[in-house]
Amino acid sequence: MKVLGIETSCDECAAAVVDGGIILSNVVATQIPWHAPWQGVVPEIASRKHTEWIYDVVNEALKKAGITPAEVEGAAATAQPGLLGSLLVGLNFAKAFAWARNIPFIAVDHLLAHLYASRLKYPLTDRVTDKATDKAPTDETSCSCDKNMAAEYPFLGLLVSGGHSVICRAGNFDDVSVLGTTIDDAVGEAFDKVAKFYGFGYPGGAAIEKLAREGDSEAFTFPLPKLYKLDKQGNDHRYDVSYSGLKTAVVNQLEQFRAKPRGETETADIAASFQKTAVEILLRPLLRAAEDTGLNTIVAGGGVAANSYLRARLAEHRELRVLFPPPELCGDNGAMVAGIGEQYLLRGDRSPLNAAASARVKVFKKRYP
Image (tube, rainbow, N blue to C red):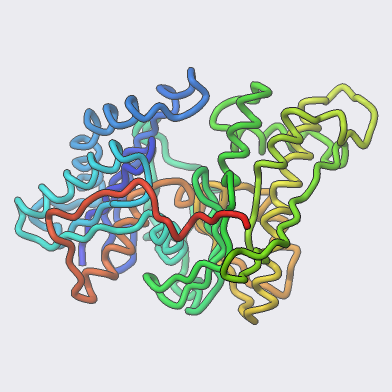
């Protein structure tokens, strides 16, 4: 089933065509140059750029897939969570496309789409391009994923991005139970805020990862959160994470956690030590969840899933089978939306054309205690 997927939840204007779980095209127009002066996403700029670009991005996705609008059999778009103004652009475009072609439409959850990304496949000759550079990724970032690589349900999901840090149990593509999540900042948000404070560059995650390669991760011993309190229902926070304390330590209390004398690579040491602690905060509850549930397959998704240090640390645990999407499918993209949208449509699910966008999904956030 040829499904057009549209993703505009934040600052990436993306569209893709998927057929039978195979990516026929995947076009991403990045807004990084427009947000870089502010070292963060400006919602008004993001929604305006989506409005300016959406038609061309969709047209390019259809062209690269080698199909016409008349050959599209279903349309999917992200409806939640994200920046409301940005969500509305892609959601309404997909609705209009579906209405004009008299084809089924489905509104999907952005986080479930991220978790589905690792199940997608590329034709051997396919490549993903970025509209801003019109360049194909190198072999290092391309992936020809064999169908047998897909994880069988159930498995543990690790969703890590600028807005979310979630550990969950996936029983199916749309059957997800949240085990743990952030009680304050998400991991990607912490990366961005630390990078902005020290002027490491934008986007913060990529800038810190690059700088950390030159630093000493033992130069600072930043604290790990201790989430032991019970909430009002008597539930503990065994699988939850917190990043506000780490962010405060790195930004406001740096000298308290210095473990080695000052060196020539001071900024690189900060980046490396921060990255190490940020990843450790994720690994502790994730490994607890694997032990408690007996699930030894972990599927990662979200922008932070592209982090090479996170991948390397998880690879050390030979008892686990860990699946990551190729890097270009970790960030926001239309292929993951088209892919999970296809599953809904094949099952017979449909969304009404008055389906609303939502900036938040309550289940992915927690209060403490």
